[in-house]
Amino acid sequence: RKFLAMCKSNVILNGINFQAKTRREDGSFDTADNDRLEESWKIWGNNPKFCSMDHRKNFVDLSRQVVETMARDGEVFIRLMRGVEDNPFQFSLWVLEADAFSVNLNKVIDNDTAIIMAIEQDKYGRPLAYHQTVKEPGLQNTLSQYQQKTERIPAEDIIHLYIQERPGQSRGVPWLNTAIRPLDMLGQFQISELTSSRIQSSAMGFFTSSASDSYVGTGVDDDENLVTEFEPGTFQQLPQGMEFQAFNPGHPNTSYTAFTKQILRSVASGLLVNYNNLSGDLESVNYSSIRAGHSEERAQWQMLQHYVIENFNHPVYKQWLRMAITSGWFEGN
Image 1: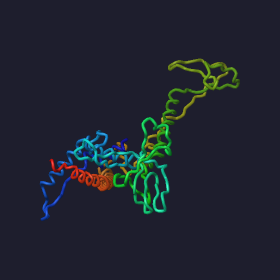
Image 2: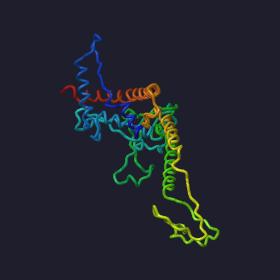
Image 3: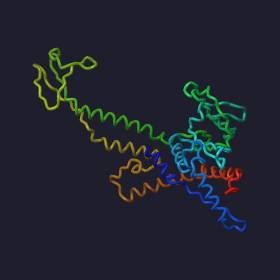
């Protein structure tokens, strides 16, 4: 959750500002037109009923959701909805998770075209269309992936955001995949440490004797083993012929802190963020070391922000402007 929050705050924060730069024929900025464009964009983006198909998020909140979904799932789909009713711009955005496009949908159409993980593409890998799963009400849990209907969406109506790490890669990989294994090991280690510490504080030891039948105990456990229960602060006399053998698991483990830090450093390295920022651990940090870590991390956020601007903000603005003009928004405003 902390990593996803870092992605939103470092890439979007309070929104990526739009500044219009239209020019007159003489090359000077057209201030009046630029002001109209910026004000109209603000009206559309600040109103969830205009911006989002579900009427729940304005453009800034929607942008944060886009970045968070891309980081969590490795990809996000934004469907450009044109001709929306009760919308003066006739344009809204529909944010879709990766599950809306089944990775099990693979089909050869002809020699030059195929559907690969719900993305219809040519022999060069250029997307031609996206096949969105259509779930009928009440049948979501009864239909398999192969029985569900799909809707073919032209590629120009979909913005597919993901980091392509190798040529020909059609779908994104969750950014947290590098952290799954070390975090699983850390979780198991914490459980074992907690269990051992609880045993240390509750289990006292064992009774031993040469004649095992002389021990009767105070009861039996689930496996029919004889046990003796003690209350805190009590002393009991050992049965005749019995010796007490203390049990000491040696916990809490003194290496717990060092092991935890090492695992979280590995996680932070895989996520391309600074360990101190991810964990909130500022112990043994000085100005020079934390500044060096921030500089490298800042470069990663700048690269990601540039990707979002070029592949999300710019395409959305172009489609918004086209629809704002054709809907007659500027004629009446």
